[in-house]
Length: 457
Image 1 (cartoon, rainbow, N blue to C red):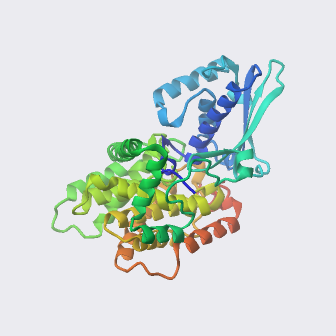
Image 2: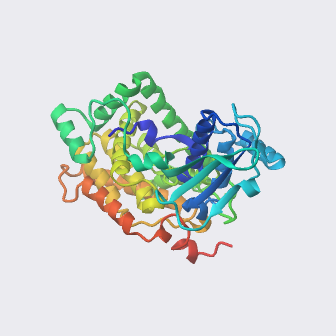
Image 3: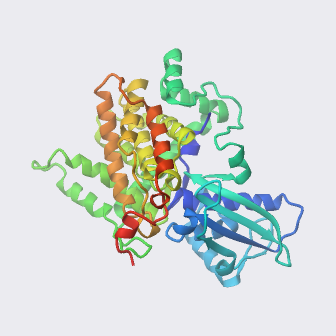
């Protein structure tokens, strides 16, 4: 099993990797399918199902689908150009993706929300269709957005969601036991294993430049969030808080009366800054999802800004280690809130952040695995119940608490020798089982929990 660090950390847009980025990517894949078809097409249609329907408007799924069908991709997204393009599409009822010519698409009629039973493959399903001049469907595909911006067609999902078609890598581990055994037998760290696997697939230059870009985008997102005020979109009238908190921390810096626990405020505000940017539709890095995008950057920022001896030279160690842990969670359970609740999003992110921090602080592979397990274990059972379907309440604060848990988990693990009762593999399997047992209304549908108990109209 191999999932690249660039699979676990994707540059994209808010507010959701599964509900915004995924549908945009799926639409792009459908355009490629149309380009490869011998048929001529006159129009396109899209229907959203399951969680994509229930929380689609709050997650901007409709907007992302329209832009995706027009040829826009998450990693090159430009907000101003996208707004102009949307306005043009709504005015003309036409999209014009490269290589396909003008296609009829009326957003009010050709994009539908199906609130009936979910599609069989996953809670996040969508059906894209292309029609001829008579309006008959001549090409159709079902896609599933399975979390973290990953997209699979119905056939791919049926064939096996964890299939890796690439060339063999030198250290192919399927679970944490195999990972630790490889570390012991090779004398390498978890980051070393991951680095060797990455280089075998795409070379050292891409790894170096790609990792640097990931952190640059993460840090830029934090800095924008710390500098921006105002109200977040969506109608909940949630005001950005990160700038005010950070300004207060800066004013109190160096004061004799400052309490030691203020460091928690720094950790939390770094995460909140990211998730406020995500909620506003800004550029973020999935880590491993958008809803949990603040945890890993916040832990990294804490380490670089507040831990003596921290160096940007070790950013690759942090991210490679975190990606290894995230890959195990995705491979053996889920990183999708619509599939397993927020334990799969913020819980996975906290495990990744804890592992990365333990690694750069000199932890052994066993201590790193312990750190990841502690962080994930204490998110088990966490539901995903966003108020009004927006990635705002409780998501923004939850990232702050997840980052704090990650730092605490790493610290606790480093105080031990790596031996512990609950293994990371057992914890991941427990998370998977818990997600299966969790009622669907608590899995990113906004039909239960805070979403129905907090007035949002």
